[in-house]
Image 1 (tube, helix red, strand yellow):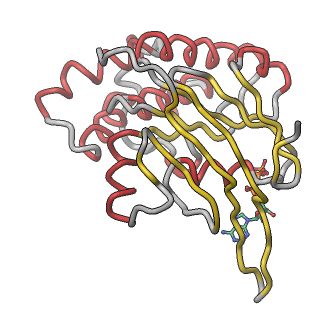
Image 2 (cartoon, rainbow, N blue to C red):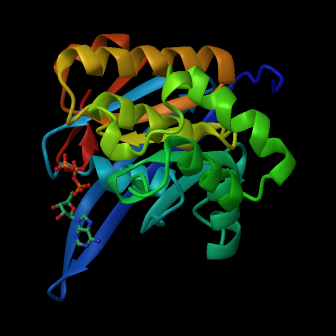
Length: 229
Ligand SMILES: Nc1ncnc2c1ncn2[C@@H]1O[C@H](COP(=O)(O)OP(=O)(O)OP(=O)(O)O)[C@@H](O)[C@H]1O
């Protein structure tokens, strides 16, 4: 297990993101400031179109700000080129985004194995890490099922296992409970709390669901490209 880190994992300073749409600037993020400490559960809420996913893409190093700074573990993500950002993303960040969905023809086990392969983890580690992480999300008995043989909540747990298998510092989840009923959503949040404790991961997620906000350490509310309050 990694040593207990303390302090600030990520700092976002005065971040703006503008897209050119039809030759005109669209100001989506208009001066975002946030701080994410180690081993916290942070939630972003806000109406559809308020800019949550745009911010998550920046925090995850998938995109770069038009203005402002993003510091990840004391490294300036906003200044790094594609190659270095990709390396950080592969090794230190886990994603639960629609775009990183499960491979339908692979079992839960093989789906998790694939992430480790992509992250450059040595093959000898896969054998212990894959079952360990599937146990952790409560799927020890369903490892060899394929996605269509699992419930929505179980599929989401495979997605979590896949996202944390390479031991990222930061886990980013875009609407991880969107497709789930309230009981399954609560189970996913319990898994999140568990992995913060056991895997020492920090989680930042977006949600529209008011019932799960209470388990957050901090909630940022996005209104039209800025944080409220
Ligand atoms: N690459 C892009 N080019 C142009 N406009 C974009 C781009 N990405 C996002 N936008 C625009 O930015 C705004 C914010 O989008 P974003 O996806 O961040 O919102 P959101 O809060 O995540 O919404 P939802 O809750 O529906 O996912 C939208 O108006 C969207 O059309």
